[in-house]
Length: 452
Image (cartoon, rainbow, N blue to C red; front, side, top):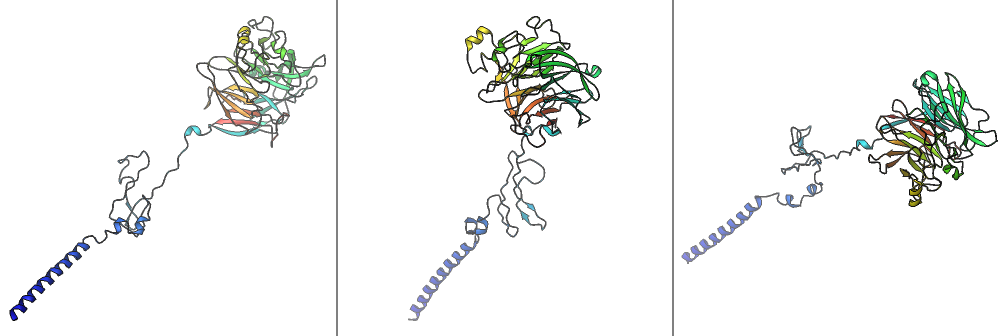
């Protein structure tokens, strides 16, 4: 009995030892990775942090902080710690850097390259401007006043106020103005204005005037009895590179005048500064230089080529920019723009199609100028009345259709004229008081645009 009891106790002891060893092995295995659950999604404080976000300073981890790079940055860019590496804070603990997206910068080309300011305001329908070598800026107001800005200030009293037979009615009045090439020494200038002729009809004429330090006086009538009426008086006067005067005239709402070589209406004219007819005009003894125009109001020569360009009002749209050639016929009223087709008619009569036209849009183009300096050098700028904009025309080197961009759309209202000053400053004239606009505070204005 005693031997059996001893054997039973030995078996029980061995079983107990095996059981005890199994329990110890399980406990040891569990202690080898006490935080395994926290690193596989069971720690809400870690899972709540978006990728790339700095950890709270009270939390640290032995995991590697992901490197965050700004677009275009290389892994080896810069010196010291790599982009996005953790850095010690003031207390000496380590935290991931805060990632901040830099605001995108607009491209330099998107910035407007001129600074604008109002040089003069409260003007009465300014129509044309001219720049003297001594820095004075002369300008004509349609109701009949010749005025001057000197030393940056508008002189209150006009240099000249036209009297009868001068008349300002509708689109008529004191319009074009140009200074003589020798103005610095002779003080001569040329103006275009409407008047009542001997028959009592409204007409237009070109005068030579002399401008002094405080006033101006009429010296000579160079050309008169240019057809005129309430509307369609043309009116631009420019001194060409050849030293001759070029003058735009309207057809006073009589379209047939534009096709009549014996009429001065609906034309671009060319005369000498003393009123004579140049020997090389296309029709001997006639001041007519080109015909078939409706109501041209802009003239400008491209500096490199010397080619003359003109702007012209269409009937209700199809406003035109034309490249002018001596003796050419620009089609009014037979064609308008190129929308009317009439290819055979154009071929038969050798009518000139416009370089560009407005289609169904209305520009009502007026003064124009080629820019020779500054950020818009080489561009042709055209003022727009009904369009209330400035047209920036980029001519094609191959002579094809130009690219046209609208600037200042409805910002200033009706823009009558644009010109470049000797120093590269651009000048705009508004015409919101001309009877067709909506006058704004301090209208009309002369606005200067200085290159940045």
